[in-house]
Amino acid sequence: MDQNDSSLRIAIQKGGRLSEKTLLLLENIGLEFDSYKNRILVRCRNYDVELLLIRDDDIPEYVQDGICELGFVGHNVTAESKADVTSLRGLGFGKCRLSIAVPKTSGITSLKDLDGSRIATSYPVLTREHFERQDIHVKTIEISGAVEIAPTLNVADAISDIVSTGGTLKTNGLVELETILESQAELIQTNRPIPQHKKDLIHKFLMRMGARQQAEKSRYIMMNAPSDSVKHLCDILPSLKSPTVLPLAENDMVAIHSVIPTHQFWEVMEELKNAGATGIVILPIENMIV
Ligand code: PRT
Ligand code: ZN
Image (cartoon, rainbow, N blue to C red; front, side, top):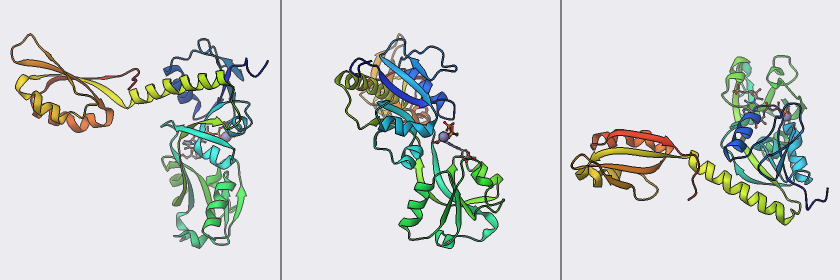
């Protein structure tokens, strides 16, 4: 197929921690797909796009080489790959960090104590860079899985691994020494030339994603209140625009509607009640274009 006629191609992780949330995100912006089961290429039914389902480690390179124009992948994987791609935006899920950890009983308290040590990791590039920046000499031992067991097996003195809750480190008697990189899932784009029709598809795709991300950050709030408390309530409400105030059948009562940042709801709820608001209802917003 001529590159100019082909669909926009997006690489996503086939089966792993990021797969479910990535597919949900695509669904939430209105994209419909047939079954993913045992498929590598999946066509979208209502948008000129196809998904390439592959291992996450391959995603940055596929995007770099222009096989896919976009990719959903952990920032840790992109950074380790050194692929020539552009990160368009963080996606707010898959949050984790690449950290150096040592056995609790080792007595090691600073990075300098690791001079001359062996570090087990699946992230040799980022790990070596981190130590080199601080002029500390270590030997990296590349391990593809179960890195946390390496010190117990005396394969390494310390590890550099992905940490989320810290539970795995704790179970294995390890403590974090230093963070190398903070990470989350991100959307990356190829730096290769993109034909105009695909640029247009990407623009529309990003608009939809933006509207969805904005909506997720906001809630629609409704409440009833005595008319004379409106001024006070409006001062409390961190609304995006001035709230809508509607008269109610009951005398001297009004309904107030507004959009507020999700995280601020719990902070203002008590204040709103104390200022006379009743029947406070908070609703999710499907999409929001500001
Ligand atoms: O098969 P494929 O190669 O595609 O997948 P994978 O096995 O390489 O990756 P996967 O699915 O495990 O993770 C995909 C991405 O999720 C990673 O690249 C990170 O961006 C992100 N992510 C978020 C995590 C974690 N949280 C996480 N906790 N990736 C791995 N872990 C592992 C970590 O390696 C360690 O073993 O979980 C353990 C630590 O977790 P806590 O919660 O005990 O600290
Ligand atoms: Zn992987």
